[in-house]
Image (cartoon, rainbow, N blue to C red; front, side, top):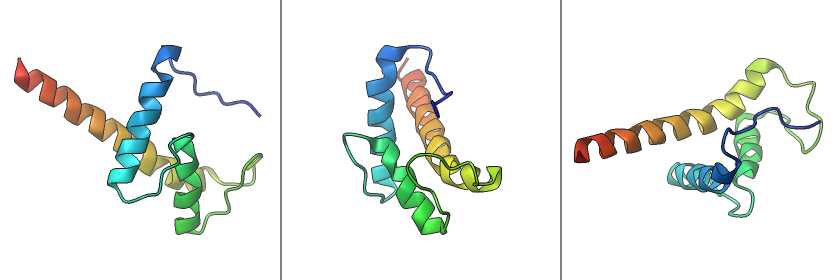
Length: 90
């Protein structure tokens, strides 16, 4: 099954992956520098959610949110912090 989350600027993928790695490392997770998206398996394991590579159609939306929420939410908080820092410099 293909991913539906497409970024508007494909060239930004590397930067987003780096941001994800930095944010999740700061929270104490082990992050694979080649594929920082793999941190979701560590989060799922920590929460006792049976996430596997491949098809995970049996997960509830609540379970999926518990895995993705900390990742995406942390990234958004960091982007807001970065934007506020840039605004303060002007």
